[in-house]
Image (tube, rainbow, N blue to C red; front, side, top):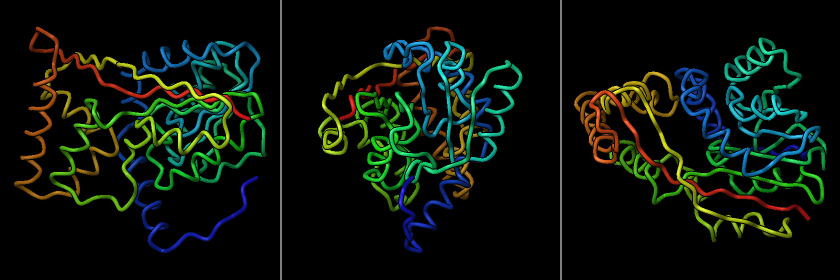
Length: 275
């Protein structure tokens, strides 16, 4: 188990704010539109039936539940209590033997070398202390096991979305999450505990049955960081942010129909073999 650490008041405030952020909106509903990303992520890992798998920053279980359906022995962990409740409900409804815990990616509540696969898709990258995240992912994975992440890149569409938010909101006081999408940074963070590191840039296709305006409203209502970003602004900044996001989605939209939005977003697929 990790050694308890004393957080500075500033870091405790950041963590409290992050928990509030990820509990805002309706991530369970939001994630249903991204299920294909979890399928593609797991297909690249080829997790054998019966393997132990930990999904870190699991949300409402979009990866963990898929792995459980394929026969893995799954545990999911997330800081958002409501997401964990949703994941437990989904597992119960499907009759899946998957366990879901409330916990912090920087202090995972599991013993050393507990899992053969430790994964995180667009999740652990948002924790405020990335070196601790890297250490924890490696710590709870068995020797010869696999740590795998999917992390948005700064150059990709989601990275551009983050830059759009930054025009309206002050920095969060933590390293940029998209540094987890930078190859050299990932090597620095994970190679001390890995024998092999496979990094490849992958495109995930967002495909929504809404116009770009509808997509922005969907994110605003359901995706915690977007919900909180709008809530932190007053008029006219709220309207200006909404228009900037609509313009971004419209600029990258590949769909021909006006009531559909299809955008390719780049992420870094990380597969590390643990020492």
